[in-house]
Length: 251
Image (spheres, one colour):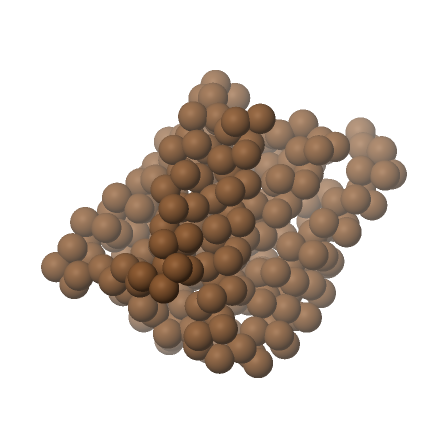
């Protein structure tokens, strides 16, 4: 792989294997883990490029695990959120080298951390049906804006699904569908922005292998989790996500 040191490739492979495992077990956090770890030894635009193809392929398998019809139904059910993510992901991706990340990380991380800790404390927050459309749009805009810059657009969707008290299998499928559409848009956006190029694309393709292996191991764990344990581990991982985003903003 021209342009990259052997240790960088080795570290990227190991990180992607672990990120794929977490995604298989809980359904999200793969881009967060990869981006957080990759930026320790790679420039942020390169780190973003590396995660694009592994994210896309694992989202593809997650979205269609219960078949095409179920995936299409999930896409229809969350079409407002998906539309908002797509529009604002494309917009923000064009400004990836200009928009300061720290304020956006703090603005996203702190509310997500607070939400997860509130839920973990035993005080669930249920979203009223009449507010669902507005919540879908608002959280889609937030996810799209942040996703185009960092490749991470999942946390707002997780908040939405948890607030709707979504069943485990449906939650995994909806995440897969929304993340798949978003990752396809991210790939297209960064082919035009120049982040994904002749130098970074081969490495991103290589990382698909450990991503799929880790994902398969994680799915075996996820299948054994009941609804309550799945929800609890989702909230714990969401809290970690919020705390990590806040840490990145402050330090």
